Length: 215
Image (cartoon, rainbow, N blue to C red; front, top):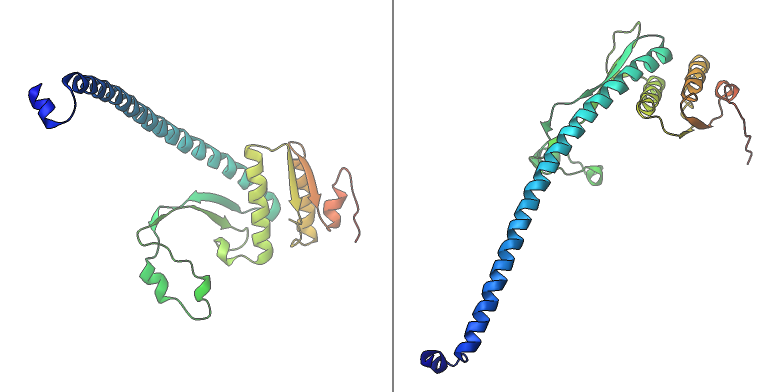
């Protein structure tokens, strides 16, 4: 007690009181820390479960999209096949590789990717009937438009929305393909309500109700 008083830090009773308060605070914080650790473990387990569920749902959804895509693509092109595939993860070009391709004309348009970034995505494998060419990059503009339409329709069939708005999706189609497009529109209309913006006569002929707009 004398030493405490000589140190000038207060009386013994005050020190004991502060000690007890500090001890209680320390015990409280220890309990809070344990609770946080339990919560962190629970969250990690939840994340693991969610990742497994997402992977399973993604795989299941992709299979359903591919089944629908096979049907729609065959109807539009009169054969052939198209399939969505998961790309293998790959490392994006390094900063140095990107910089080496810069020119003064396109310098502002080049996106710099951090070195070491992993990239993965979806690619579409396309094979047209009576043609040896494969791959989306070798298709004509009209063929790409048809492939895109088939893909959009396929995705909408996995989980049909209550209504679907299609804005000039048939603009690049010729007369024969427009008739196939109109047949597919009617098929989609069995599961969803459709609002179709078009100038195409074949598409308009397939409409249940027609609204004309002039400018």
